[in-house]
Length: 142
Image (cartoon, rainbow, N blue to C red; front, side, top):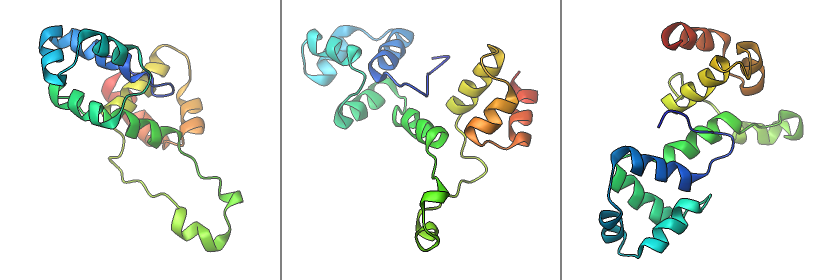
């Protein structure tokens, strides 16, 4: 799974890609979920999936699909401090640790740079990622 679009997640397509990568048979999947093939095909075409099914997919494919959603939230969640009163801002301010960026986030952002869809300065501005962090990733992975 090289690239995952963290802006618009279609979890069914992501799961189908992972199944194809691992070459897992439809029979094994149907037995694991105790459903017919049509139900699996519906999951593949669905942009969202019930969390219980997503847990099962994560177990079957040995991949934490919830990390994709976490990465999405990290990249796209913004608090507009101008709309929050000083009294409330203490309780709602987000604090991120240095190693919060998953490999999926790094791959996504570096893919934007590699494909010339965004410059590193645009990524810094858009996603609020420190300049030194982007430069370190570029040096290490590009």
